[in-house]
Amino acid sequence: MITEAAAIALQETLRAQVITTDELPSPIRTIAGTDVEYDKSSNLIAGSVVVLDYNTLEVLDVASHCMEVSFPYIPGLFSFREMPPLLEAYHKLKIQPDLIICDGQGLAHQRRFGLACHFGVTLDKPVIGCGKTRLCGHYEQLAEPRGSIAPLIAEEDQALIGNALRTQPGINPVFVSCGHKVSLATATDIVLKMATQYRLPETTRLADHYARLALLEYKDGLNPPPASE
DNA sequence: GCGACAG
DNA sequence: ATCTTGTCGC
Image (tube, rainbow, N blue to C red; front, top):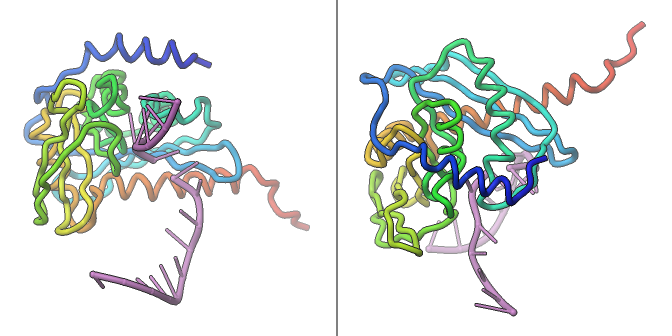
């Protein structure tokens, strides 16, 4: 297994490849969501990628992959834990999405290289980071209406590293940041568009659903089938 | 030294 | 992350 120091060094190297301007298809036709589910009573994890029609949100394709977790949870090294099952799942897709929304941060990361950046650079695909909670950076004065945004500012150098985005009125915001080949403004617009009815974008909600399903089905398959006679 | 810390 | 259901509070 890769050491913590080597993982940090790899992030420092790969971060130079991140593109923070829009290099995505126009119009956007398909969008994918990703999520990873953990089994509380084993070290199994399931990663899922779900591809939706960008305009209708119809599910066009889903792929999942179960495996044993191979890296501990360390804030800042999240991608080394979640990327393996997500990459396996992604390569099972029959339909390649125009862009992807990851469940986690992109640039809004200690070394500006969160999961969304790592996934985007690895696949050379447009990726948006959308986390449920903050990893680093601070924000203030976020208004209540849906669509309100507040810049997420890095404490070290006051750099703009993302946006706190209120996707539903009076509900806690999500944290949007560049992953790869999508600007912050475009990423924020897209996440708001995908969060039609709930706090989280539909991409993330569906990926969570399919990852949970995949883990249950995989565990079922491991158990010897009931004796039939 | 202490607190904070994506899932 | 894991927890899945009614309950409390604004």
